[in-house]
Length: 525
Image 1 (cartoon, rainbow, N blue to C red):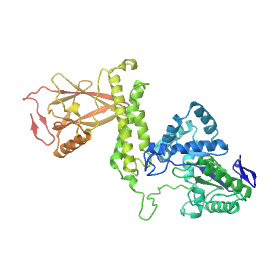
Image 2 (spheres, rainbow, N blue to C red; image 1 turned 90 degrees about the vertical axis):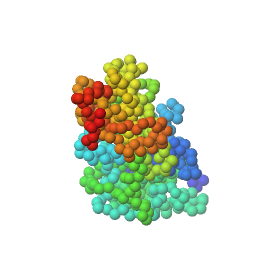
Image 3 (cartoon, rainbow, N blue to C red; image 1 turned 120 degrees about the horizontal axis):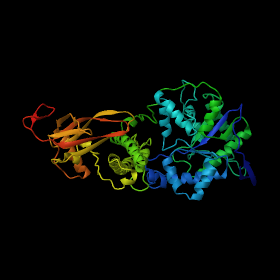
Image 4 (cartoon, one colour; image 1 turned 180 degrees about the horizontal axis):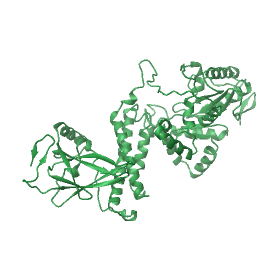
């Protein structure tokens, strides 16, 4: 309960009403959607810098919302983007963290949607709809106390088929913009409008109720980067809840998606399903949101490639034991979570923001690469974790094979020396695949860990590939070295969640018995 001056005294705004059976219940769900990078970078959005592009500061949102939630125990707020909350949380004192965890989360004032970074909610929805994964995902969610129906039912409350018709007069329930008309309940001031705003509220609720199953509707009270001054939102919602419930025709309450879904589920309705998507969206004439699938293909590939690499790196890190100091996989995991925001990997962010995503990924990849090299050195040496502080083997990884660049395989292998190649399989089943590496020596022999020779094939390096290699080496700032003459191909077999070791050596040349043949049929000696 809170008090406000009216008629020279105070009014007690009653915001404590819950669900009322037999009435139309309007669930007000306060929320702020804060893009993890879009027009500005994730850190610029958090601290509120670069405001010449957009005036947005998520740090202010969280500071302001937390203070407003403390003022009234009935208020609630939904927050999604953990990349921002994590930044804010680590800056708080131990006292605030303890008090915040006890007072906000435990009392359900502050609700988090999705257990990780932005929009993982939609990923879970996709997983649940896949038959082969649904049972495992649902079991996992239940272990964490999450009802999977909370993730899907809010999308299914409309009768099917249905028409989506925008209603300008509803804008006051959705956004707090300059054209918003506030509830003015002090009769000593001009423009007293309580009755008018209550009628507007009820009319809008009835309009939505006519196309909604059950006597519950949800109004999402928020938008991008709103609640930087949270009290302006909550004060208006306090007034609406108080005066609408005093009118009595409908019931208004502070709510969350989980509360809303629980009452929907309790209605025991059969929900019609929409199985296709909503694409292409359009927010104006000839403005269709179809570029998600094709924009910035290089970033899309980079995210996909590093996602697989991250999985393997995490597994190897676990097998040898995560160290308290030194390189680890955290930076790469954090960068992948940020880059997979819906304005990141989709390609809809500004160029400088995309550059920031890529920089974070590159920094994380370098640290993960060091983690992988250290772990593999320990594992293939059959050493205990305590003995792996100073690895005996120094592994190099060829991250630029797509431009035919791998210095360790291009160098000449001296007689009696062997190049050791370890192939790791992060999947849960055996994998057979073809490995190809750039080489200059046409007389190499590949053996597995049992000493068995592996069949190989050479493919000539074409001019186009050579030119691309030289172009990108210059762009990367690497020294220009001789372009390798061949691709060496051979088949590998790797056990699930394991590795196989292969040995590459220069074979003695026997002119009578051995000739190497290129795939174009031209022999070479």
